[in-house]
Length: 289
Image 1 (spheres, rainbow, N blue to C red):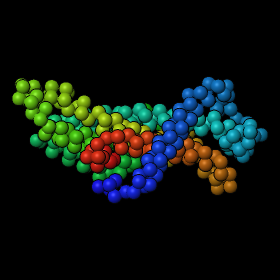
Image 2: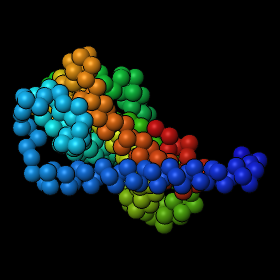
Image 3: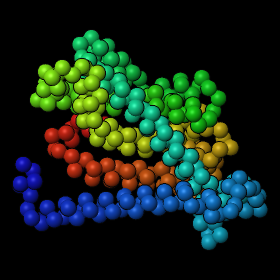
Image 4: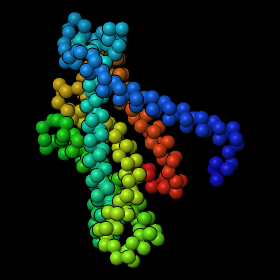
């Protein structure tokens, strides 16, 4: 109805804006991926190399992002940090999506007391802030990549479980499901052959949306000193180590890691928006995280 009330000019401008947003998102993600893949092997430099004579140099041709408080090249450090943060975000998002899909599918497919127990568990976990649960998880292990991945995966599967359950409940009312049950298909076969394939687009969308969320979660934990070890480059560690420099008026050690958190987040949001518009309008409300 809203599209019908738009003028032709508004429709053209809307399509142009969406196209521009998608193209910008594709360019940003392509630059990010190429930088993460190509810069470390081509640079032939040690990202941990200390040069106190070059400490806190502003951006220049020699050091496009400047240097940090011990003279390390910030461009190389940021690329390594972005690679680590993206890896943590992607693995954690995949693990959280698998957990959420399994839980949501069990609740939606079996129904009854299974559905009630599982969704009460989801509601209980949702009542506690993710960051507090994440701190509790990482506090049980030494700082490292896998405790952070576990922290994100065990605290971010809840929205995926709700999405998958909602979609499976919708699919269960379709005629082809009734036909499969009437033909003698077991509940397990109906779930695996008919219900789970139907939730793949929603689960995939949830996983993609979770990647930047997981990156921010890792950065928050590292900033608090509970994530990756301090010597390991990650965007959160870079921002945390630059606090003193920022207070002294040196802006670049904080600016560039922050931008490398923000830009992929905006790019992924733009790509997901285009993906969502290709889905039926009836499903859009179910895909909101």
